[in-house]
Amino acid sequence: MEYNPNTDRYWDETALSQDMKKAFDICNGCRLCYSLCPSFPELFKAVESHDDDADLLTEDELSLTADLCYQCKLCYLKCPYIPPHRFDLDFPRLMLRSKAVRAKKHGIKPADRFLGDPERVGRLGTAAPALSNWSNENAVMRQVMEKAVGIDRRRHLPRFAPLRFSQWVEKNHEKPGAADVAIFSTCTVEYHEPGIGQAAVKVLAHNGIQAAVPAFQRCCGMPALDGGDIAGATLRAKQNVAVLVRYAREGKKILALQPTCAYVLKKEYPLLLDTDEARLVSEQTVDVTEYLAQKARKGELKKGFRRSLGTVTYHLSCHTKAEGLKRSARDVLSYVDGTTVNVVDHCAGIDGTWGLKAEFYDASQKVAAKLTKAFHEARGTQACSDCALAGLQIETASDRPPSHPVELLWQAYGLERSDGV
Image 1 (cartoon, helix red, strand yellow):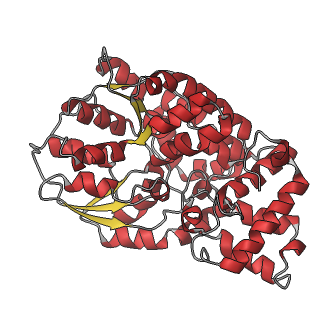
Image 2 (spheres, one colour):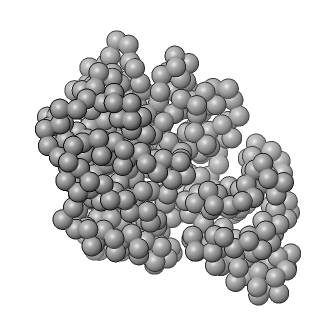
Image 3 (cartoon, helix red, strand yellow):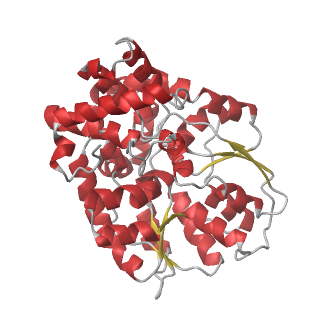
Protein backbone atom coordinates (compact mmCIF):
# COMPACT_ATOMS: atom_id res chain seq x y z
CA MET A 1 0.00 0.00 0.00
CA GLU A 2 1.18 3.52 -0.71
CA TYR A 3 1.22 6.33 1.85
CA ASN A 4 3.89 8.63 0.43
CA PRO A 5 2.39 11.61 -1.45
CA ASN A 6 5.67 12.12 -3.28
CA THR A 7 5.03 9.03 -5.44
CA ASP A 8 2.90 8.72 -8.57
CA ARG A 9 1.05 5.68 -7.22
CA TYR A 10 -0.26 7.70 -4.28
CA TRP A 11 -2.31 9.84 -6.66
CA ASP A 12 -3.47 7.05 -8.99
CA GLU A 13 -7.22 6.54 -8.49
CA THR A 14 -7.18 2.91 -9.59
CA ALA A 15 -4.31 2.09 -7.25
CA LEU A 16 -6.08 3.90 -4.42
CA SER A 17 -9.25 1.88 -4.97
CA GLN A 18 -7.26 -1.35 -4.97
CA ASP A 19 -5.44 -0.43 -1.76
CA MET A 20 -8.63 0.61 0.02
CA LYS A 21 -10.45 -2.58 -0.93
CA LYS A 22 -7.50 -4.65 0.26
CA ALA A 23 -7.45 -2.73 3.54
CA PHE A 24 -11.22 -3.03 4.01
CA ASP A 25 -11.01 -6.79 3.48
CA ILE A 26 -8.30 -7.04 6.14
CA CYS A 27 -10.28 -4.88 8.59
CA ASN A 28 -13.50 -6.79 7.97
CA GLY A 29 -11.77 -10.03 8.89
CA CYS A 30 -10.25 -8.57 12.05
CA ARG A 31 -12.79 -6.16 13.60
CA LEU A 32 -10.63 -5.17 16.59
CA CYS A 33 -11.48 -1.53 15.87
CA TYR A 34 -15.26 -1.92 15.68
CA SER A 35 -15.98 0.49 18.54
CA LEU A 36 -13.25 3.06 17.96
CA CYS A 37 -14.89 5.51 15.56
CA PRO A 38 -17.74 5.80 13.01
CA SER A 39 -15.52 4.66 10.11
CA PHE A 40 -15.39 1.01 11.09
CA PRO A 41 -19.12 0.26 11.58
CA GLU A 42 -19.70 1.94 8.21
CA LEU A 43 -16.90 -0.12 6.66
CA PHE A 44 -18.27 -3.40 8.01
CA LYS A 45 -21.83 -2.55 6.97
CA ALA A 46 -20.65 -1.79 3.43
CA VAL A 47 -18.63 -4.99 3.10
CA GLU A 48 -21.45 -7.11 4.54
CA SER A 49 -23.87 -5.62 2.01
CA HIS A 50 -21.72 -7.25 -0.69
CA ASP A 51 -21.62 -10.67 1.00
CA ASP A 52 -18.21 -9.90 2.52
CA ASP A 53 -16.64 -9.30 -0.90
CA ALA A 54 -14.67 -6.04 -0.51
CA ASP A 55 -13.85 -6.04 -4.23
CA LEU A 56 -17.49 -5.12 -4.92
CA LEU A 57 -17.40 -1.92 -2.85
CA THR A 58 -18.39 1.22 -4.72
CA GLU A 59 -16.39 4.43 -4.78
CA ASP A 60 -19.10 6.16 -2.73
CA GLU A 61 -18.86 3.47 -0.04
CA LEU A 62 -15.08 3.79 0.08
CA SER A 63 -15.28 7.60 0.25
CA LEU A 64 -17.89 7.64 3.03
CA THR A 65 -15.72 5.49 5.28
CA ALA A 66 -12.76 7.78 4.57
CA ASP A 67 -14.78 10.90 5.39
CA LEU A 68 -15.80 9.44 8.75
CA CYS A 69 -12.13 8.98 9.69
CA TYR A 70 -10.99 11.93 11.80
CA GLN A 71 -7.33 10.89 12.13
CA CYS A 72 -7.36 10.07 15.85
CA LYS A 73 -4.73 7.37 15.13
CA LEU A 74 -6.16 5.01 17.75
CA CYS A 75 -6.75 2.22 15.24
CA TYR A 76 -3.08 2.39 14.30
CA LEU A 77 -2.20 1.73 17.95
CA LYS A 78 -4.54 -1.26 18.10
CA CYS A 79 -3.95 -2.74 14.63
CA PRO A 80 -1.88 -5.95 14.44
CA TYR A 81 -1.12 -5.39 10.75
CA ILE A 82 0.78 -2.09 10.77
CA PRO A 83 4.20 -1.87 9.06
CA PRO A 84 6.48 -3.83 9.03
CA HIS A 85 3.76 -6.52 8.86
CA ARG A 86 3.43 -7.89 5.31
CA PHE A 87 -0.10 -6.39 5.10
CA ASP A 88 1.52 -2.95 5.56
CA LEU A 89 -1.72 -1.42 6.86
CA ASP A 90 -1.83 2.20 8.00
CA PHE A 91 -5.58 2.89 7.99
CA PRO A 92 -5.47 6.61 8.96
CA ARG A 93 -2.93 7.46 6.26
CA LEU A 94 -4.90 5.50 3.69
CA MET A 95 -8.06 7.45 4.55
CA LEU A 96 -6.08 10.68 4.33
CA ARG A 97 -4.87 9.57 0.88
CA SER A 98 -8.48 9.09 -0.20
CA LYS A 99 -9.33 12.65 0.82
CA ALA A 100 -6.22 14.00 -0.90
CA VAL A 101 -6.93 12.26 -4.20
CA ARG A 102 -10.53 13.48 -4.20
CA ALA A 103 -9.46 17.01 -3.27
CA LYS A 104 -7.03 17.05 -6.17
CA LYS A 105 -9.70 15.81 -8.57
CA HIS A 106 -12.70 17.84 -7.40
CA GLY A 107 -11.09 20.71 -5.51
CA ILE A 108 -10.92 21.39 -1.79
CA LYS A 109 -14.33 21.85 -0.16
CA PRO A 110 -15.13 25.36 1.17
CA ALA A 111 -15.24 24.14 4.79
CA ASP A 112 -11.89 22.38 4.40
CA ARG A 113 -10.33 25.41 2.72
CA PHE A 114 -11.52 27.69 5.54
CA LEU A 115 -10.61 25.39 8.41
CA GLY A 116 -7.37 24.34 6.73
CA ASP A 117 -5.94 27.85 7.04
CA PRO A 118 -6.13 28.65 10.77
CA GLU A 119 -3.47 31.37 10.41
CA ARG A 120 -5.69 33.43 8.14
CA VAL A 121 -8.66 32.88 10.43
CA GLY A 122 -6.49 33.75 13.45
CA ARG A 123 -5.15 36.95 11.95
CA LEU A 124 -8.64 38.11 11.03
CA GLY A 125 -10.09 37.11 14.38
CA THR A 126 -7.41 38.77 16.50
CA ALA A 127 -7.53 41.98 14.44
CA ALA A 128 -10.79 42.78 16.26
CA PRO A 129 -11.14 40.09 18.94
CA ALA A 130 -14.13 41.60 20.74
CA LEU A 131 -16.15 41.71 17.51
CA SER A 132 -14.96 38.24 16.47
CA ASN A 133 -15.92 36.71 19.80
CA TRP A 134 -19.30 38.42 19.71
CA SER A 135 -19.89 36.99 16.23
CA ASN A 136 -18.95 33.50 17.39
CA GLU A 137 -21.58 33.69 20.13
CA ASN A 138 -24.34 35.37 18.12
CA ALA A 139 -27.05 32.98 16.92
CA VAL A 140 -27.69 34.80 13.65
CA MET A 141 -23.99 35.06 12.79
CA ARG A 142 -23.52 31.39 13.59
CA GLN A 143 -26.27 30.46 11.14
CA VAL A 144 -24.53 32.53 8.48
CA MET A 145 -21.23 30.88 9.33
CA GLU A 146 -22.73 27.42 9.06
CA LYS A 147 -24.11 28.14 5.60
CA ALA A 148 -20.97 29.90 4.39
CA VAL A 149 -18.16 27.67 5.67
CA GLY A 150 -19.88 24.62 7.15
CA ILE A 151 -19.05 25.10 10.85
CA ASP A 152 -21.92 23.80 12.95
CA ARG A 153 -23.85 26.55 14.72
CA ARG A 154 -23.99 24.50 17.94
CA ARG A 155 -20.26 23.97 18.29
CA HIS A 156 -18.41 25.93 20.95
CA LEU A 157 -15.64 27.81 19.17
CA PRO A 158 -12.31 28.98 20.58
CA ARG A 159 -12.18 32.61 21.62
CA PHE A 160 -9.76 34.99 19.95
CA ALA A 161 -7.14 36.45 22.28
CA PRO A 162 -6.73 40.21 22.75
CA LEU A 163 -2.96 39.74 22.57
CA ARG A 164 -1.32 37.05 20.46
CA PHE A 165 1.36 34.89 22.02
CA SER A 166 4.02 36.23 19.61
CA GLN A 167 3.06 39.80 20.61
CA TRP A 168 3.41 38.90 24.27
CA VAL A 169 6.81 37.35 23.55
CA GLU A 170 7.95 40.49 21.75
CA LYS A 171 6.88 42.71 24.66
CA ASN A 172 7.70 40.58 27.68
CA HIS A 173 10.12 37.77 26.90
CA GLU A 174 13.75 38.68 26.76
CA LYS A 175 15.45 36.60 24.09
CA PRO A 176 17.97 34.29 25.75
CA GLY A 177 21.58 34.61 24.66
CA ALA A 178 21.89 30.83 24.54
CA ALA A 179 18.53 29.05 24.55
CA ASP A 180 18.20 25.59 26.07
CA VAL A 181 15.04 24.68 24.13
CA ALA A 182 12.88 26.10 21.35
CA ILE A 183 9.10 26.42 21.54
CA PHE A 184 6.81 25.52 18.66
CA SER A 185 3.85 27.57 19.78
CA THR A 186 1.07 26.29 17.43
CA CYS A 187 -1.89 28.25 16.01
CA THR A 188 -4.05 27.42 19.01
CA VAL A 189 -1.64 29.12 21.39
CA GLU A 190 -0.77 31.97 19.02
CA TYR A 191 -4.33 33.14 18.38
CA HIS A 192 -6.55 31.62 21.05
CA GLU A 193 -4.72 30.41 24.16
CA PRO A 194 -1.57 32.54 24.62
CA GLY A 195 -1.69 31.78 28.34
CA ILE A 196 -0.43 28.26 27.58
CA GLY A 197 2.65 29.69 25.88
CA GLN A 198 3.20 32.26 28.59
CA ALA A 199 2.93 29.59 31.28
CA ALA A 200 5.38 27.35 29.39
CA VAL A 201 7.97 30.13 29.10
CA LYS A 202 7.64 31.06 32.78
CA VAL A 203 7.62 27.50 34.16
CA LEU A 204 10.69 26.64 32.11
CA ALA A 205 12.49 29.81 33.23
CA HIS A 206 11.57 29.10 36.85
CA ASN A 207 13.38 25.80 36.44
CA GLY A 208 16.45 27.38 34.88
CA ILE A 209 15.53 26.41 31.30
CA GLN A 210 15.75 29.28 28.81
CA ALA A 211 13.31 28.99 25.91
CA ALA A 212 13.61 30.55 22.49
CA VAL A 213 10.39 31.29 20.64
CA PRO A 214 11.38 31.40 16.96
CA ALA A 215 9.61 33.94 14.78
CA PHE A 216 7.89 33.11 11.47
CA GLN A 217 6.35 29.86 12.68
CA ARG A 218 3.53 28.46 10.56
CA CYS A 219 0.61 26.17 11.31
CA CYS A 220 1.86 22.59 11.66
CA GLY A 221 -0.26 21.64 8.64
CA MET A 222 -2.66 19.15 10.21
CA PRO A 223 -5.79 21.21 9.40
CA ALA A 224 -4.72 21.23 5.75
CA LEU A 225 -4.16 17.46 5.85
CA ASP A 226 -7.66 17.02 7.31
CA GLY A 227 -9.08 18.47 4.10
CA GLY A 228 -6.78 16.60 1.73
CA ASP A 229 -4.61 19.65 1.02
CA ILE A 230 -1.25 17.90 0.77
CA ALA A 231 0.39 20.85 -1.00
CA GLY A 232 -0.67 23.26 1.75
CA ALA A 233 0.57 20.93 4.49
CA THR A 234 3.87 20.33 2.68
CA LEU A 235 4.50 24.06 2.24
CA ARG A 236 3.96 24.67 5.95
CA ALA A 237 6.23 21.74 6.82
CA LYS A 238 9.03 23.17 4.68
CA GLN A 239 8.73 26.60 6.28
CA ASN A 240 8.64 25.25 9.83
CA VAL A 241 11.58 22.92 9.28
CA ALA A 242 13.59 25.82 7.86
CA VAL A 243 12.94 27.78 11.08
CA LEU A 244 13.41 24.93 13.56
CA VAL A 245 16.29 22.95 12.09
CA ARG A 246 18.98 25.28 13.50
CA TYR A 247 17.87 24.36 17.03
CA ALA A 248 17.72 20.67 16.16
CA ARG A 249 21.25 20.81 14.77
CA GLU A 250 22.43 22.27 18.08
CA GLY A 251 20.86 19.32 19.90
CA LYS A 252 18.11 21.44 21.46
CA LYS A 253 14.68 20.03 22.04
CA ILE A 254 11.73 21.57 20.19
CA LEU A 255 8.77 21.75 22.58
CA ALA A 256 5.37 21.61 20.88
CA LEU A 257 2.59 23.10 22.98
CA GLN A 258 -0.24 20.97 21.50
CA PRO A 259 -0.20 17.17 21.07
CA THR A 260 -1.52 17.17 17.51
CA CYS A 261 1.23 19.52 16.39
CA ALA A 262 3.86 17.44 18.16
CA TYR A 263 2.54 14.35 16.38
CA VAL A 264 2.65 16.05 12.97
CA LEU A 265 6.20 17.32 13.40
CA LYS A 266 7.36 13.90 14.59
CA LYS A 267 5.40 11.59 12.31
CA GLU A 268 4.25 13.47 9.21
CA TYR A 269 7.10 15.84 8.38
CA PRO A 270 9.62 13.09 7.55
CA LEU A 271 7.10 11.52 5.15
CA LEU A 272 5.94 14.77 3.56
CA LEU A 273 9.44 16.17 3.00
CA ASP A 274 11.74 13.13 3.04
CA THR A 275 14.77 15.26 3.99
CA ASP A 276 17.49 14.91 6.60
CA GLU A 277 16.40 18.26 8.03
CA ALA A 278 12.81 17.07 8.53
CA ARG A 279 14.02 13.87 10.17
CA LEU A 280 16.28 15.86 12.49
CA VAL A 281 13.45 18.16 13.53
CA SER A 282 11.28 15.08 14.06
CA GLU A 283 13.88 13.48 16.34
CA GLN A 284 14.23 16.62 18.46
CA THR A 285 10.53 17.39 18.83
CA VAL A 286 8.84 16.53 22.11
CA ASP A 287 5.46 17.40 23.61
CA VAL A 288 5.94 20.04 26.31
CA THR A 289 4.05 17.94 28.88
CA GLU A 290 6.32 14.97 28.23
CA TYR A 291 9.41 17.18 28.49
CA LEU A 292 8.31 18.39 31.91
CA ALA A 293 7.31 14.85 32.94
CA GLN A 294 10.80 13.62 32.06
CA LYS A 295 12.23 16.30 34.34
CA ALA A 296 9.79 15.39 37.11
CA ARG A 297 10.65 11.68 36.91
CA LYS A 298 14.31 12.56 37.39
CA GLY A 299 13.53 14.96 40.25
CA GLU A 300 14.85 17.82 38.14
CA LEU A 301 11.82 20.09 38.50
CA LYS A 302 11.83 22.48 41.40
CA LYS A 303 9.55 21.76 44.30
CA GLY A 304 8.58 24.70 46.53
CA PHE A 305 5.03 24.74 45.21
CA ARG A 306 2.84 27.38 46.81
CA ARG A 307 -0.34 25.36 46.61
CA SER A 308 -1.78 21.99 45.76
CA LEU A 309 -3.93 21.50 42.69
CA GLY A 310 -6.41 19.36 44.59
CA THR A 311 -8.23 16.86 42.38
CA VAL A 312 -7.48 17.19 38.68
CA THR A 313 -9.70 15.50 36.09
CA TYR A 314 -7.37 15.05 33.15
CA HIS A 315 -8.40 14.20 29.59
CA LEU A 316 -5.96 11.92 27.79
CA SER A 317 -6.29 13.07 24.18
CA CYS A 318 -6.11 10.71 21.21
CA HIS A 319 -2.96 12.29 19.79
CA THR A 320 -1.30 12.22 23.21
CA LYS A 321 -1.92 8.48 23.23
CA ALA A 322 -0.74 8.23 19.63
CA GLU A 323 2.57 9.68 20.78
CA GLY A 324 2.77 7.00 23.47
CA LEU A 325 2.47 9.50 26.33
CA LYS A 326 -0.22 7.99 28.54
CA ARG A 327 1.51 8.87 31.83
CA SER A 328 3.03 12.27 31.04
CA ALA A 329 0.41 14.58 32.55
CA ARG A 330 -0.21 12.27 35.51
CA ASP A 331 3.50 12.21 36.28
CA VAL A 332 4.05 15.95 36.06
CA LEU A 333 0.88 16.98 37.92
CA SER A 334 1.33 14.36 40.63
CA TYR A 335 4.75 15.92 41.23
CA VAL A 336 2.81 18.73 42.96
CA ASP A 337 2.31 17.67 46.58
CA GLY A 338 -1.28 16.95 47.58
CA THR A 339 -2.55 16.62 44.01
CA THR A 340 -4.69 13.73 42.80
CA VAL A 341 -5.02 13.10 39.06
CA ASN A 342 -8.01 11.20 37.66
CA VAL A 343 -7.57 10.29 34.00
CA VAL A 344 -10.48 10.31 31.52
CA ASP A 345 -9.44 8.11 28.60
CA HIS A 346 -12.20 8.83 26.05
CA CYS A 347 -12.13 10.52 22.65
CA ALA A 348 -13.42 14.11 22.51
CA GLY A 349 -14.78 13.69 18.98
CA ILE A 350 -13.17 16.92 17.75
CA ASP A 351 -9.91 15.60 16.30
CA GLY A 352 -8.71 18.52 14.24
CA THR A 353 -11.40 20.05 12.04
CA TRP A 354 -13.75 17.05 11.77
CA GLY A 355 -15.88 17.75 14.83
CA LEU A 356 -16.34 21.40 13.89
CA LYS A 357 -18.20 20.60 10.67
CA ALA A 358 -21.97 20.62 10.53
CA GLU A 359 -22.11 17.34 8.59
CA PHE A 360 -20.29 15.50 11.40
CA TYR A 361 -21.44 17.39 14.51
CA ASP A 362 -24.00 14.81 15.65
CA ALA A 363 -21.55 11.96 15.07
CA SER A 364 -18.95 13.94 17.00
CA GLN A 365 -21.27 14.30 19.98
CA LYS A 366 -21.98 10.58 19.93
CA VAL A 367 -18.25 9.80 19.92
CA ALA A 368 -17.71 12.20 22.83
CA ALA A 369 -20.62 10.98 24.97
CA LYS A 370 -18.46 9.07 27.47
CA LEU A 371 -16.06 11.98 27.83
CA THR A 372 -18.77 14.58 28.38
CA LYS A 373 -20.49 12.33 30.92
CA ALA A 374 -17.22 11.89 32.83
CA PHE A 375 -16.51 15.62 32.97
CA HIS A 376 -20.09 16.47 33.85
CA GLU A 377 -19.86 14.13 36.82
CA ALA A 378 -16.47 15.62 37.77
CA ARG A 379 -17.64 19.22 37.95
CA GLY A 380 -16.04 20.89 40.94
CA THR A 381 -12.64 19.37 40.20
CA GLN A 382 -9.96 21.04 38.09
CA ALA A 383 -10.51 20.11 34.42
CA CYS A 384 -7.35 19.61 32.40
CA SER A 385 -6.33 18.64 28.87
CA ASP A 386 -3.24 19.05 26.71
CA CYS A 387 -5.50 19.57 23.69
CA ALA A 388 -7.31 22.90 23.51
CA LEU A 389 -9.61 21.69 20.73
CA ALA A 390 -10.74 18.80 22.90
CA GLY A 391 -11.32 21.47 25.51
CA LEU A 392 -14.21 22.81 23.43
CA GLN A 393 -16.02 19.54 24.08
CA ILE A 394 -15.01 19.42 27.74
CA GLU A 395 -16.24 22.97 28.28
CA THR A 396 -19.77 21.93 27.36
CA ALA A 397 -19.76 19.40 30.20
CA SER A 398 -17.73 21.11 32.93
CA ASP A 399 -19.04 24.67 32.41
CA ARG A 400 -15.53 26.09 31.98
CA PRO A 401 -12.59 25.42 29.68
CA PRO A 402 -9.93 23.02 30.93
CA SER A 403 -6.40 24.15 31.69
CA HIS A 404 -3.28 22.79 30.05
CA PRO A 405 -0.95 20.87 32.41
CA VAL A 406 1.70 23.56 32.08
CA GLU A 407 -0.84 26.17 33.18
CA LEU A 408 -1.63 24.11 36.28
CA LEU A 409 2.06 23.81 37.03
CA TRP A 410 2.35 27.58 36.66
CA GLN A 411 -0.50 28.01 39.16
CA ALA A 412 1.06 25.57 41.62
CA TYR A 413 4.32 27.51 41.52
CA GLY A 414 2.41 30.74 42.12
CA LEU A 415 4.19 32.47 39.29
CA GLU A 416 2.89 35.96 38.55
CA ARG A 417 0.78 36.36 35.43
CA SER A 418 1.02 39.63 33.57
CA ASP A 419 -0.53 41.58 30.69
CA GLY A 420 -3.98 40.09 31.23
CA VAL A 421 -3.18 37.04 29.07
